[in-house]
Length: 413
Image (tube, rainbow, N blue to C red; front, side, top):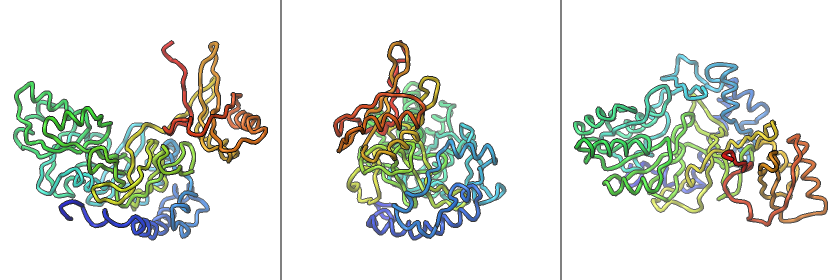
């Protein structure tokens, strides 16, 4: 551990990092398939030994949360995707859905220590952790990470604001961990009651958006706040080391950005769904679709860390939409694109006209052969069972926001 970086892994050349990850991946996937029947079913026919690079990994199917929830409902609690028995888990959590998540036995099972270090926390700090410890793993994700770094943690959880302020004035914690907005609630209440919160100098927030205006307000109040992007399933996926410089992908995690509803990675800079592969031996996740949208930032972070950078959370990828009483799913649009490789980008737009649902597929293509519109229209009708208008737009006309289906009906009128 240096003054600037958690360890030397963070400053490796990207090629060295990928070589290390993909040297370990075949054995990891083989073990998951051997020990977890859910993975054996999901990856049936997969040759684990072939998973030596990102192109090979991209050939595997993405496991999305609805599929995992369905498997858990059929084979509770973990759907056959955990490699260890229930009795061997340190803790078991239930997130909304419900969806069940196990905790393995590692010191920092969700890999949060790096995020704390990048946010300025150091061994000996006292952390006021106001993320919920109830039912879901959120509070424990940050708790374990802070303690792995050598910090002491006050497990505040949520609510009981005045009691939390009493703890802050007594324990004098160096930093705050929790959701972005609850810190403001604490600070505003402290100002109202005349409580001293001046010991707080830094924060690591997750579980919500840190808006620029809120970050600026915290800075004016003497607290530098950075973000971690984490999920209950995968733990800390990426984290900030400086404000407005992107989120650095965590070590021991492979992140891909794929077209929503598909298994296909998108080009660098294009918005898509965050897909994660981790190396958690108790609860491996292999091409797990988080349902979150983001994009890869070009170049390296000025902090010296060399891993991939994400723009941060940019919305949700689940765009399943009911049209004329029938659901249309991004997977269907992905199937259409697979049948028409001439299309470089497309969006199904849903509107209301004369009190009826209508849809049109806007698409970009470099070349436009005779009959392409008619062929696309026929495919659209075949895959969705609905008719819709097809229109070609100029390259770059469609927004780069990860949307495959855009519902533009006015629900207020």
